[in-house]
Length: 332
Image: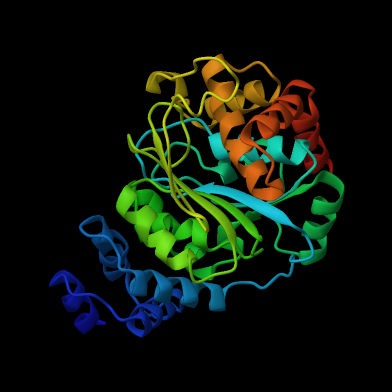
């Protein structure tokens, strides 16, 4: 272990196998807390390589609780977090809008570590009970159109290191890996990334998969489409740039002030914002940002135009269907 740490401190790169072995040791509790902190934060000083990410991911997926949800043509909408923007829970809201439009969603997430409130904090606060039982998750997908996979009950390494991450309060390598670790293996993914270099690394990795994906990065640093700046996208079709004007899908000027996307000071405030938006009582900025992310997700699933899918997303929100999905999920 000391040799690996020395190699990392000298800014040398790990091979895929070294990276895999490192995370296996971490998962098995063979690395002390101080070493774990060093490993999880060292990648704040440099970007991980494609080989390192592939090795870390392979270890975590091999060690994860296994479920099979591949019978569903589902999507996950997820971001790396760690962008320091403290937005309200945009991607989680977009998931319920997509489910309200009749599609299937396998949402993967966790508690907050580098932000105020994670998707798991929201759903637990609303009364959702986390499970890794395949039949329960299938039942949720059948009846509500959405299920939620709380990362720590699928990935032992996350459970063992969660306290350390919360104590640190800054992004770690697990922010980078999070969107790559959905144990439900959804066929479709809208992936938000907090910097352009990491977006390119994701793109290189996903080119070697059969996934239907779009990787998005707002050029002012957000890990989702926020309408605060232009957006760079990567997909199997290649690279694509969207100006803010092109993202005005609802035929009105909607460039957003970053202040309008701020989340609350604590989980309780963020739950209130979440319920308010899902109830159709959000601000114009909140609604449009959530609808735009849902629109891109729907377009991944059905290949319809952005305009058509924006209308579907808007109907899902305004009709109350998205909120009813939440009510149904919580009742199961």
